[in-house]
Length: 288
Image 1 (cartoon, rainbow, N blue to C red):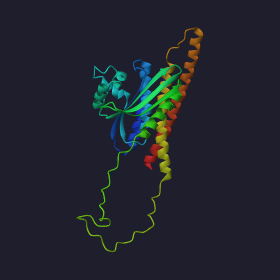
Image 2 (image 1 turned 90 degrees about the vertical axis):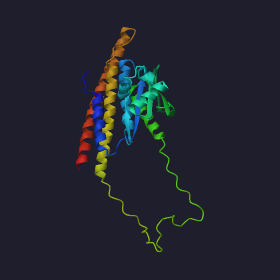
Image 3 (image 1 turned 90 degrees about the horizontal axis):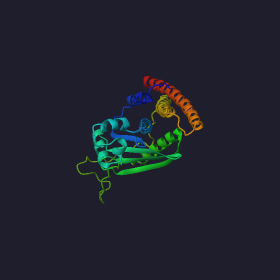
Image 4 (image 1 turned 120 degrees about the vertical axis):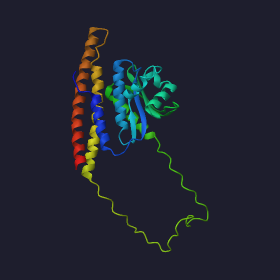
């Protein structure tokens, strides 16, 4: 089945969103979801695409630089003791070395294991230097691609919402008897200060049209990333050889894979349409 690379489309869309933002990236966060042992080609492809879905979910409204599975594998290529991505993430010393190489103090680590008729999904925020685990989400998901993608997005959103903001700096204590007195070295307060008007200044007028265009563009771009990723995962499943002990079982499995191929094409077309919508909305928003 011939189709454009979903990873390339995802990178282009994320780059488009990054160019529109005036906020510099803050924290570097490693993000990776590993399917089974990440050694089989199909598992690795599925790992990469689920990681991209998690990155797309985290990229909305947060000031951080996200590092995905492909970058982490490249960093581990120079470490002969890593034993692969899945094994490295399970060992504290290897996780610390990996975090140091990519400059990430924290990581969102996920795993997907097939257990009978369901997937066991687990995600957690982990300190790379100490391997201390923070908030964690676990779910049992039916063996269905759409359900798995939805579970990953929901779990990532829940973990992101659990992060507490940094504590505010404490206010200086006020000593008894000094309330209303000027601080040492401060200019004396005038005896008759002007009264502050009780009515607040009128709020600036919001350009609703431009705001709606921006929301539409960013939302369509994020959904396009999800659609391309879903197309890639479904296509990978559809391209696997049919399995079964008997001819009837193989024919039934082949029929299911044909349906997966059709679904992959639907996801692909949806992603292309969303890309066009996102591009048109954002270009109009930036030029007007």
